[in-house]
Length: 198
Image 1 (spheres, rainbow, N blue to C red):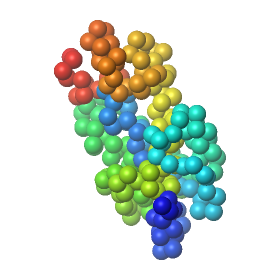
Image 2: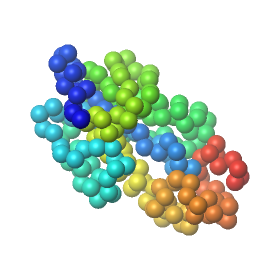
Image 3: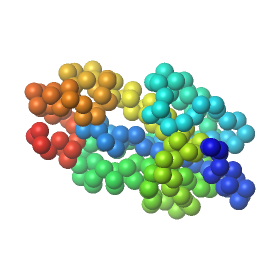
Image 4: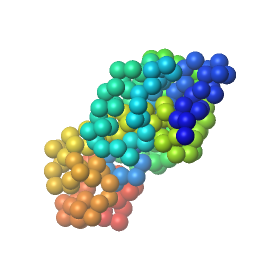
């Protein structure tokens, strides 16, 4: 599979800056949703870029550093649990992706998003289901977003011990749910996701 298929097509149509966007953290019970937008150079391809969920943390961190070094532009945004509770996770993800795109130092000519997302931006766009595994620039975005969010949740593990955030990164594992039942919710829990334990 040619992971540069979409980028090559767009470059051939005259789009110089093609941006990939992805999110991490739509499903967890705690923590923000984090999105990254990346514009990668077309002539300096990093080997091994793929869906961030398919690789080890060590490999992700190594690739994230390389992506940030080589990118023409990159931006990371997050939307906090309180906003997720107010506007719902779908709208929070769309907002987060939009903010990441608008946070780039270079305005893209075209935006490729993972999943089935239409963003409220004034730039041509296309969403690709399983884009993080099929499209190079979306894969790059997924890696830097995941590394950012995992590091943040590891920090929260120190602030709110006993919930296992360093391991579960906020997802609803059995140990995490048991901790909620025993200790209650923290300020970073999504109230709309944890109603049954409130």
